[in-house]
Amino acid sequence: MDDIDSYLSAQAGQFEDDLCELLRIPSISADTARHADVRQAAQWVADQFRSLGLPTETIETSGQPLVYAETPKVPGRPTVLVYGHYDVQPVEPLDEWISPPFEPTKRSGNIYARGATDDKGQMLTHLLAARAWLKTRGKLPVQLKFVIEGEEEVGSDGLYGYLESAAAKEKLACDVAVISDTSQFGPGQPAITYGLRGIAFFWLKASGPRQDLHSGTFGGAVTNPINAICRLLAPLIDERGRIQVPGFYDDVAPLSDRERQQFAALPFTDAAFMKQIGVSGLKGEEGYTTLERRWARPTFDVHGIWGGQQVSKTAIPAKAGANFSFRLVPNQDPSKVIAATREFLTTRCPPGIEIELTARGAPGVVVPLDSPYVAAASRAIERGFGKRPVFIREGGSIPIVTNFRQQLGVDTLLLGWGLDDDNTHSPNEKFCLADFHRGIKASAHLWQELAN
Ligand code: BES
Ligand code: ZN
Image (cartoon, rainbow, N blue to C red; front, side):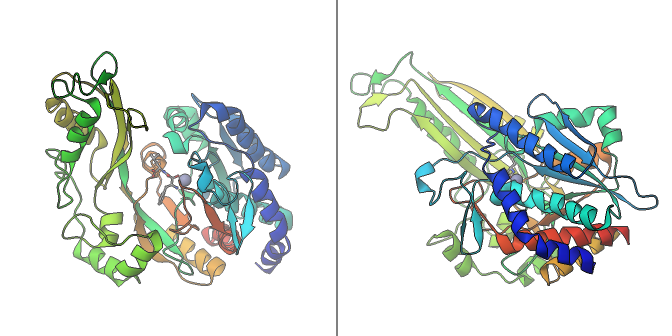
């Protein structure tokens, strides 16, 4: 692999320039005003594959296009599906960014920009590793099929729809999938992720009086929609961190003693964690450690709650809204959770308030660790990062992993090059440039290890 390793060293600067080019495109899938930019990002990715001489398609979906490219089949060797996303999260609050989100800036070994780690930087590591192989050897040791989507941050509807078709199942047929859209365990400690949480996400609207009312004239006699939302949401979880929706825990896969021991053996302290996120105390489900709570237990979080005006004004608002979610663990059925939550909220809705609830969900996953693919990934990561990976779970969700299992019958290798403090979905998102290069090297070695 010396030829490829030297190509990677020689091209390091070029790789960073390429990353910056992609990071300058404000491809925010949640913002319709940015949809032309989302398409431009798709175009940029497709052009990269085309410039490598690979057959490349931009596949239209119900939403944003999928970029598909493949290298030739290698007889007797596995076919690997590489998934990533070129869309990014919104950037608000904008005034908290030290440098503007779409002007990639290098500071102390990191590249700062929206999408740096989630997922443009991580996704590119695989494209660039393929480029290294093609430029040095003219071919790959395994067949790679890339599917890069533009709607991951808004629920992947287009890709879900596409995967239903027989044509898609044939096109994407593979032996194993690879996704880099997660994190290492910590700086200098790479990891392979074997579990992700699922999610049930809700939008709640509450409407009361026809229009805003004077709270002196009318207050006390009508239900205030903001008060109603608070009263509806607060009882969803108790003081001990237990979710109160009936039946919620029925299907929760318990943590085995072995897994609890493995989590406990990882170098982690609450004190360092508190310092990292800037909090003076921790709280979660009683009876579980911080890593257990983050990786393998359900949660309830309110993400936004709105209504009224942010001025001193004594009015009862006509409407209020909130969005919130439960993170789910493997074996929980999101549709059961959604139905039970709907029942919980509807039966508690106070007089004079109409609620409207919409929801979507995706299950959690655990992937087996005893496969030759995991062993190959482990060796490749050791080559790229100079250290053997540990096995971890993550609290975030990548719903497509379940679809790959159901629709394509394959497991996914979750090889994360990011770090917990990369500020994903928040201001000053970053990606460590050394990890970007280590990720490219690990990926280049992965294709060889998978061929072996
Ligand atoms: N890259 C994340 C998933 C992730 C987050 C993995 C944290 C590991 C740790 C992904 O882009 C993401 O944010 N997914 C959403 C999915 C949701 C919109 C269905 C998430 O987890 O909130
Ligand atoms: Zn992501």
